[in-house]
Image (tube, rainbow, N blue to C red; front, side):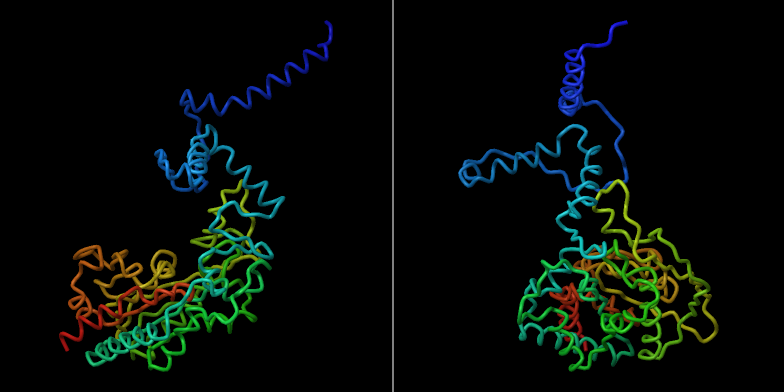
Length: 390
């Protein structure tokens, strides 16, 4: 049998290359259903652009159509992860505009980085003074009714690990961060402040395990449990409470992330997620039933995404709080209740006076990088409501 001629081999190679080139177009045109990976996180689908002469002359029309056409490309979802893996492994680049790759493989969310560098303008001194005044008025009114208010500042990953930010990340000279702008006035006004950002800075050099995961934007499971235990002790002392006991019975150490410890890594859409460095630790926690003399207060948590750790990952809130306790996510919607939900799900539609009357402890929990918006309007509205019903 005669060997294939060089020209025949070239035709085969050309045919294969041409077939691979046409395959995405054929798959798109014929709507061939091909099973795609399900682990990847994809961006929001872009709507079909409409023609506009204004966009035509401004040069915006072509990029808009290019982005739309790219997302409609056949087999695109099969190719995303290999492409992202090549850029991440070879070029050390993130393909997600909201995720920044720092030193030693540490990932950062862009928003908190901008806040830590002073790129997000904080409130003016007059605005800070007014907001702190509202909060002090709320705290005083609640205290007269035997209720406790605590403002908790959760740590920010880029503010805790600035040495791991890329060299291109430079802080704006003379620009105070929102955390720096609010902390002093809050403390000077006598607000019950638990500054976990400062607590984490104190733990940083001696902590045997990461307080933040390399692939996540929230505190690690280990860091959270230490923070939660600190908060529980603070509530007991400040509020003269005896809360149900929470015991740590063990510690699991490994490189398999749990909870939200790889939420930034998942956004990269890689073929193989990098292992956390160093290894992560997860305390094993037991929640004892309330003993005689111990109390479960009705608690209202108003906070950002760091609040989910107290409910979904380690259920501190369901354990220490009474039925009717709630979590108001960004002071916008009722994200969780201890027991059946009652009343409107949007905070703005609720009777705040009644909610505060039925609450023993108000916890305001915001990450240091989110303080540009302070408490998202909670204290201002609460001050107005309570001032009309002293």
